[in-house]
Picture: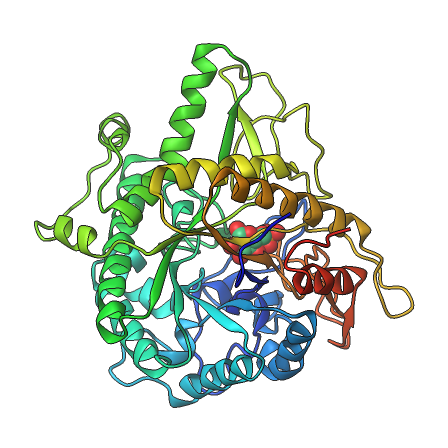
Length: 480
Ligand code: BG6
């Protein structure tokens, strides 16, 4: 088990899922604040108005806003080298289209970054993690409008200048490919439905698809321009793309299944990654657009912008793999905004997500082989039911999950992959994105909060806390 010196061990969160304080100190509401709670079987809903008889779990999150010093001290106790977090756009620009930023929002993140610096923890900052200002969605149609590029860059300019000496690593858009994969219309693009409805519901008609891919193209341009701007403001800044790994295995060696798997790998991963890492649409995109009747507006200067604004490293979230098959009768697998059929060789989590550590090695080799730039795993982990007993949680299942994934990363490094960091998801328990539950927990730190919002918010160290501390102290050599 060998990890390079200076390997960035750490954890990851996102503002909308942990900060809370949704309307405090001048913060505006983001689209994420309009998602109600759900659970494994009940979907989350998007509502235009904030209803007094509905519960919106992101409003309080785990109140990181008022607990960040305590939480960062716990991260430091584990020995974190890196902490991935996101900035809430609406703390900086409450509506998104103002000229003057919100000073209190700027100050909040400055304090967080200074706190991290105290412990030598390197921040990795996601600029947009599913929380576009609600006002931009409502007034302009979200990312489907090119106006958003301008407002996003205003936001980037402020944070790049303000935090130039405190932050080096940036990710432009979280899991940008949820749009090409058809899941993120509301949460990632801010394309709002006329009526209140399910959070993940995305129309398949031609008009909706065109709007979706226009939004994605606009995000590509915004990302590239942010990279160009960031490199001008501070040449030491390093930018990464952030892709939700969709690893498709062919269900059989039938060439039809193989072609389907290859197509999925292309359209669900390389479609976005090629634009962000190479500056052009993947060759298969043309045929896909033609077949789906997708037409988008691309300005003449866009090609050059995309070329100039390529990222410095590749980052991704990895939770599972799935299988693809032409056989419609095979059982479907549950997943993180993904589709596919069940793999008979894999076990699944409490939420049905298929656990596949070897797939992580496979994916790392695939993407490193294609792009040959440094790689980071910025999300990975096990969402599970944890039971708090006598002030701790025996989460041996989480340790086992992580141990296997760390082994797979070590193997990928031996294979030659330039892997530079690993920030496991939800290092402190937070509100689940897909279900809106608290009880789907990922953390090394247990937070006393329940699905209905009750609980003391007190933090507890789980068994995995001590284990991860040991992993980091030994730079990944002692994982037993
Ligand atoms: C990723 C997201 O898709 O998966 C996170 O970037 C999310 O925001 C994570 O929390 C785990 O998903 P869930 O639905 O279990 O919270």
